[in-house]
Image 1 (cartoon, rainbow, N blue to C red):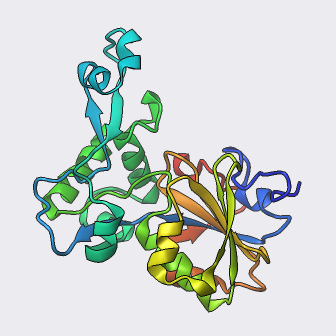
Image 2 (cartoon, rainbow, N blue to C red):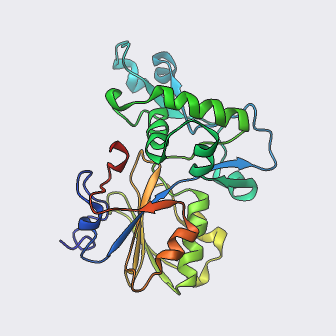
Length: 261
């Protein structure tokens, strides 16, 4: 299968990552979207997570279509939290906080448990996979330390900065950017863009990003706090990936569902 011509730049959830990307790439890195702090803002009253829970009445006020819904004890409705910092605020006053820093300061066991806690926070897991206790541990720490949770399903400001830096280093001048459904594809001349312009060109709907020579691919999907970096290790040094992005290399058996193992 040619993942580029067949528009299959994100794998099926159960398919091993290395197998899925093998026609072009020989290594896959699971990158983690960072937490962050704001250096120059009052953060105590601001939401540390990008999503908030709405009552059915609140949701119906915002979206009349939901008037058809009947009350349910098991339904949880999530919406974007307006008090969460904008990309502009994060870009100018933010400092990344790694997942490893969170693990070192809490009783959360590993990346898997931390990821499940984050996914629980935005309603991205079915009830049987949710980890409310882990989420509470995470919230107690981040709220006490003024640490904001990452957003899900989009390349964040810090990741886009590192992508720009890496592509510039490898002289990848023409960059292809595509949305989730392959409806909108555009090419960026990275030589003509400074870092801020590059960041602004990558929107929340842009899930796939790669140079024309296809030596590296950045790919993400909705509702998730991680992304994949697939590389041709003969042309992209794996050490550069580790130096620029927090995460780990996929083993032979790892799939999109690595966090359930």
